[in-house]
Image (tube, rainbow over all chains, first blue to last red; front, side):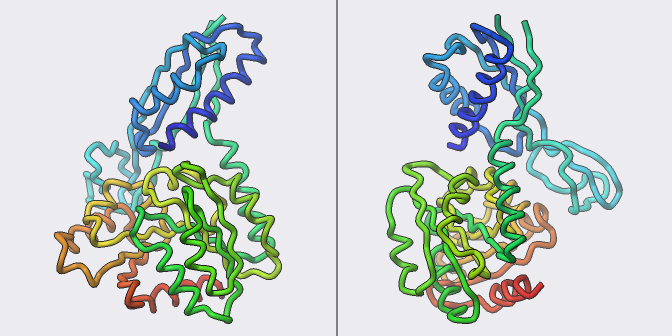
Amino acid sequence: MHEVSIVNDLFRIVLEVAEKEKLSRIDRVNFQVGRMMQVVPELFRFAFDSAKTGTIAEKATLEIEFVPVRMQCRHCGHAFDVETQEFHCPRCRGVNLDLLQGKELFIKSIEGE
Amino acid sequence: MEIKVMKRVLDRNQDKAEQIRSLLKDRHVRMYNLISSPGAGKTTLLEQTCRHLGGSLKVGIIEGDVYTDRDAQRLKQYGFPIVLINTEGGCHLDSNSIDGALKEFDLDEMDLLFVENVGNLVCPSHFDLGETAKIAVVSTSEGDDKPIKYPMLFRDARVVVLNKMDLLEYTNFNYDAFVKDLRQVNPNVPLFETSLTRGEGLDGWYRWLEGETNA
């Protein structure tokens, strides 16, 4: 249930930005989540809907864009997406890999008036 | 209208963790964050370790527990200072709660700090506490698929303890599959195989700890 902590921090940032931009209503939050973070979308949405009650984001929708886990092989330099939890290089079978992306918890933008 | 935000969530946790990391480095204190499922053997590992280290190193313990003080009670007899953090249902510790706990210790009188995180393989691995290293504890009765199911933890772990080796024959744990998966996720991580209730298999762990402390 780390989803709740993530959502709480997301709201803190979103409401700060909305205040600075003098928004009176937030309609949409565009959020990126790396697959490595094991965020469960249903739990995340539930936490989002609970947190938005009574705020200027009361009617906001949450757009979640999942970012694939992308690794680069230290042996041959090949970069690839990890799709089936197979953590080895498909080209040379190397297992010494650097994580290029997949740990994102990133608020891209908000929409509102 | 659309407003670009471009901000990372949990940055505040990360910033506090970095402050803790540099504070501990200044004071020459090493902090290990123990992460496992409930019942894998974190508290027993700490009990054995406290008993072994005895008077040789000055140890402190930060005990994360959802509601009770039972683990802290188990560890009290070893005479090391313990700070209990009850998360009140929360599934992980964060750097802010560690920051508060650290104020209870005299860091100048400390070599090693162990943090026993809340029993959970997912959430604790997302919250940097400013630790020197994460230690993953897993047991044979949980199944052999943990490294692949929880790659975030097993990739980040600096040590993996595989516990309950004495129960291996009573489980369907596939040892070779476990090692193969672990090596895929974290090729070079030291793996220590233990039977903690019997106090067996800990020599490698102690050597690793001593090596780190003298490094």
